[in-house]
Amino acid sequence: MRRPVALRLHAALATMAVAAATGVVLSMPEAAAAASGATGYATQNGGTTGGAGGQTVRATTGTQIHQALCGRAGSSTPITIEVEGTINHGNTTKVSGDSCSTAADRIELKQISNVTIVGVGNGAVFDQLGIHIRESSNIIIQNVTVRNVKKSGSPTSNGGDAIGMESGVRNVWVDHATLEASGGESEGYDGLFDMKDDTKYVTLSYSTLRNSGRGGLIGSSESDRSNGYVTFHHNLYENIDSRAPLLRGGIAHMYNNHYKSLNESGINSRAGAKAKVDNNYFEDSKDVLGTFYTDQAGSWQVSGNIYDNVTWSEPGEDNNPAGPDPQSNTTVSIPYPYTLDDASCVPDVVSSTAGAGKGLRVSDGNCSPQTPTPGPSDPTPSPTDPTPDPTDPPDPTDPPGGTNLSIGAGSDGTSKADGTSYGNVRDGDMSTYWSPAGSTGSVSVKWGSATTVSKINIREAAGSEGTIGSYRVVNHGTGAVLASGSGAGVITFPAVSLEKITFQITGASGTPKVAEFETYAG
Image (cartoon, rainbow, N blue to C red; front, side):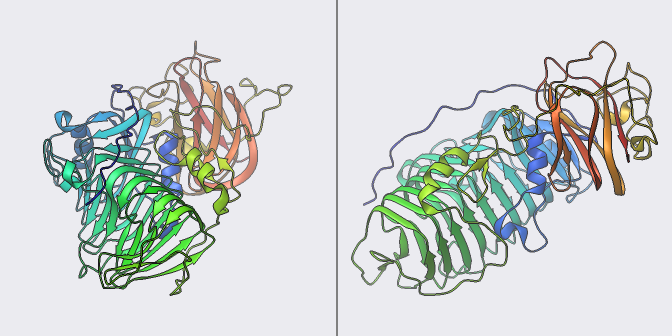
């Protein structure tokens, strides 16, 4: 008899309709972070970059998400889809096209590659609508909430999985997501994060999974052992009956997760699976590690974990708990670099970082949450950012000497002055400009090969001077912050060779209007 899952759902994020915007150089800070930050097994097999290098579009409905996928030149054309608002059955329809295969009752990522879906602004909530990844590769899903997806009752979606992957899926990174249900199978719900039928190289990081009978699985049956190479780190599993996760065959790495109120069982390694379990914090839970509900054993390697008020059942024919004193019975070699937080600080670190709407905060490996590139929902620069010298403010009337490299990049002065893309800004004409959809956003210059840059000049359109507040200058390829401060003008930083440089506006007194984004070698 399964215990009923307590209903502890949190308030939904507000909906805001935002006009769709496309352009060769438009991006938002979360998208930039997603493109350069995959961790764990998602970094293997060529890595996971999602829609990096492609067009960025905005979507406020499920239909618009499908339209963005179907509007690409091909099924592998890179794209970043920024989502804001509530996505549900009422605003999601099937869209047809040569570059997509969509459905009306879910967000369908089928037979495609090179896609990022990222929540921006006031947040993205997929309400009773699951995300299905099938026969696809190089997918990033970041900063979204998926809730109450049902396999029975009404409405139904995605077999009851919040996020489900199957059939030859490769390289998926799900990050800063909130996945939640309102009960177990008897209430119509299935898994929160499921992988089956040859799914490999997946990472789930800084996410919250809660209030569900089933956290997730790797392998749909004892014979489905073709899955694996999955990393789970800095996630919160809370009020979950079982499957945190269930692993059939393959290898999984769990580190720095906080498991709280696992009611029946937790990490269930079976059918020849291997689990490496490092520096996790298990709290107020039962049978948090072992082989359960089968006589086909799995194995585990454990180190540095804390078991706080954990109870263990007696071993039996179909029940092999690892405790009360968990010991390793296998070894697992991990091919990627990672840094472990001490298990003692995991609850605090995960509380500050895991889930959607947390500003994409991550741990530095020393029990200290860090704020990366801020997004529209978190526009305040990190207090650790360099502070501009108020005695030496940028002077927009004193431009650098030398060649404006932006013109050579084809992104300044090459098109007539209409539209929203920065490519439509006419060089030297201060009445033409690019603006983000709101008070924050990003504009970039991209070259076909590595170019050395040490100085940029941001000039605001006539009549809007002084609107730009805080900013960051970012090496788009690595995510490194080259400079930060406030106000437009000349910005200098150590010379760096890069292919794309991004000016991120993280605060403004109104809608910014960028008339010139000049770049210089010195």
